[in-house]
Length: 137
Image (cartoon, rainbow, N blue to C red; front, side, top):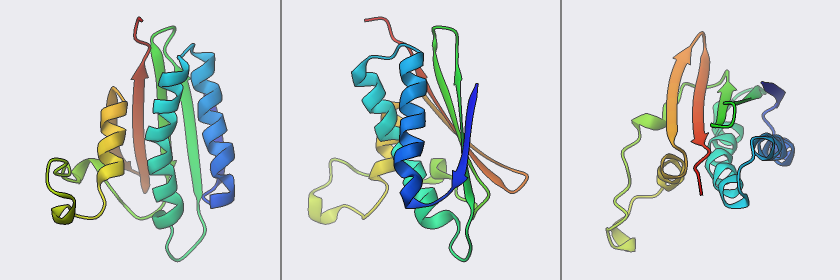
């Protein structure tokens, strides 16, 4: 298990994403899967940086745990405004562009790219857990 705690600032985005990429590489994911993991995790990280701490500074903590050749568990924690991404309705991706609501597509993509996505609010923390399994090719 590896853990990284940094201020939730845009200048730390590259470091946070590299941390996740390195953890995925250590688990033996393909380049395609690593890219999917990065796309899926960038969405909640950018949202935390942008919205979790509207009136103050705060931190973001990422924990990556390998599952013995089975995959990767990524836990993203912040102490900001409560927000459950799982409560967001799925966007109507079949609707004409002019009829679509703004937002929600990033969460939809996160759900589609990861095998499991779970959220809980515990002890003033938003805890988002994303799981990607190593699929046999």
